[in-house]
Length: 224
Ligand code: 9WO
Image (cartoon, rainbow, N blue to C red):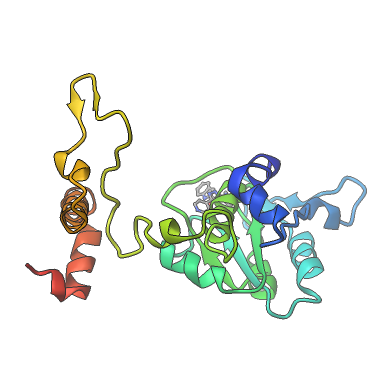
């Protein structure tokens, strides 16, 4: 499942350039019985299955035992929201462990024994934590120094300043009667910056009033 995203494009190039290393660990390899049982029915009854504490804890310990600085993160809808600021925080750490649950989740004791932090990428339930783990990995890896394309464009990203991105255009100047806004063709860089900022403000106000409010309350310079 991880092979696709981690062997394509920018992430592959980052790994090839030794900007980071990625290791995939199969929790099932840390089961103790001959059927490799990683899940069991929940105490107290109810539907669904729970991931057993021993394989989860031992799988995590197998990658953290010689790495006291590793941060272990469990991906679940119950965590606080993953954001660009969190991506920046994680990009500064030497070793991340992204723990992926399945079924109804992991035995609560595994949190106490092996997890530092819980993160959610959004308010929806998936079949497992793998896709969110790849989302987190992708957003963190592209911020690492030396990751291909980590230059001005990454610093200039949507969210770098808490606003949504402005619209972008490339050739041709006209397509099916739709023209590129004249200001972008003017060569007037101060005007172009001003237009982009204005577009970003308007779009954020329209689509994400929550971000717009935060932006205004933290950047009084922009009251005008
Ligand atoms: C299953 C379930 C069934 C009935 C009522 C509530 C329920 N919650 C869950 C559940 O959270 N299952 C998870 C499946 C257990 C952990 C791995 N799975 C998961 C992770 N689904 N969605 C995520 C996830 C992780 C990060 N950000 C968004 C979603």
